[in-house]
Length: 120
Image (cartoon, rainbow, N blue to C red; front, side, top):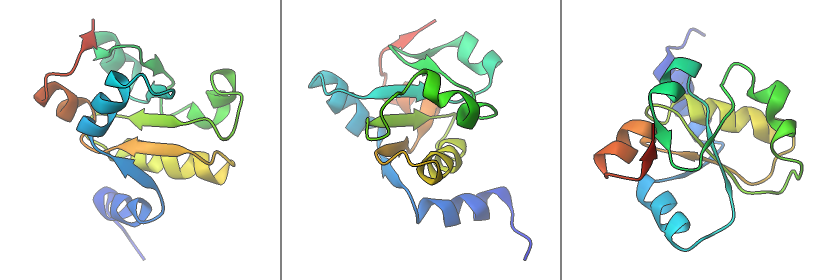
């Protein structure tokens, strides 16, 4: 069966946890402990990112996540441009045994729309 990118994402989103931009803003405000991972391409990350985010691109996240997250139950919030690539990456990390992975729906675009704190 052939699927489009968005159809694939719709299927993946049934199997993962998601949160909203406002949820992440609230977690940051409450000083909750989590690792915020920007999975966008290098050139996207270099133009700007959510404050305190680390960068592990989607193309290498499975290979390199262990360099940044040593505990498989640690809360990891992934974001991309709009919430689709992060959903796919979240499913992949779950398959690797990470148990507390969340994809931020809305991504970078949603964060900027809500005027969240960024770094350039």
